[in-house]
Image (cartoon, rainbow, N blue to C red; front, side, top):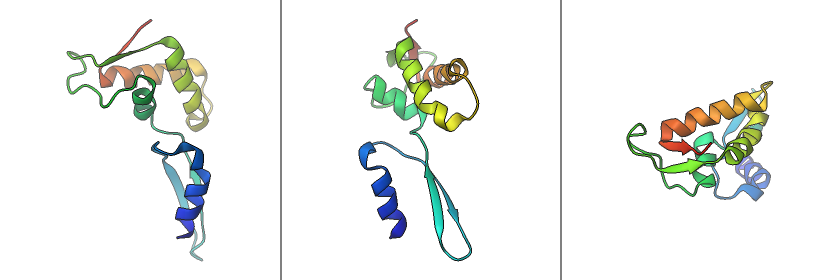
Length: 106
């Protein structure tokens, strides 16, 4: 129960979002955990109000992302991606968007 209470306290402002967690459990049954940022797919779906991606991304397009939206998502993900720049993170977001059938509007 300790994990649930701590997790809920840390993610209180992110209700409704998928929040990945990295848990470390020690031999004395104590634990620590780190919350991550939501997956890129979820951030894209939220940005363009999308229910799900395309089942045929090369044929059926389901939405459009602006450069500003891509940049915002990339900046959110930078925390988890380590020492890369915003441009590299944006390329990662663009690739994920394309694989979902989302068009880039720039």
